[in-house]
Image: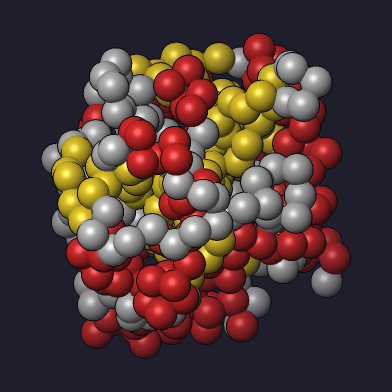
Length: 354
């Protein structure tokens, strides 16, 4: 055992500080070093993949990926291929491409729709033809939310509603809406609203379906999102804190991103104990449905409030993130120390079990 962990980054991108790193990268590196291990940052470039592979396999026990997929030169395919090679050689991955695709893609919601976490009328479209055939029908039941598979900061997440309220109230559920139906489309990235025709909007959304890993999730709009989205941040299996993200006030505002003007309140997990307990009970089912017991190193689960059949509150899962969860605003909570402890523990467990 080398007692060494490499942290992967890419050069450039809006998530970088003046030192060229994400603000939470060096705190992780320094926390690992404080525990007597070696840690360093290695930048990924596609043309360096073979050299990086040789360097890492010769000198490190594990890697931590701190790479936003949208910032990877040449796309994520080459980066994921490198990580997969390292995984095959026995390097402990945090998080691996398998984990990022299983937990971080929006179609995780569809895989979980048979659980109590996700409404049963949640659909996935992997082909434009399926999207065009089904979405005019699903919209007849009421407002919907479309989510692209691998977007971030609310990009490609659209709230869709019929403009004509009389038409919306009178349409027979299960009836395909005409393609010239006027719809109001609000994008979560900044809550901007566009009035479009249904057919033209679906043509526009084909871009989210086409290409590698392309798909769209079609989910019922949850009206109580105006009360806020509740995010659990976890390090491994351990809930660290809960963020209550309340959208900015406005008729159609539903986004809970900082970019859209949402306000964040940070709570200890016990403040949301009912949600924490529900999520803890569901985690074995989540692992089963998403294809494995490996829990990401740093990940989040976002929930929305809904009305339970008994009149009380319940929670609906909105998405899971694990590709590159940031915590720059919470460094004073000591999350970097928890990350270092969890990462080192995973390496030590691997060698203890060998």
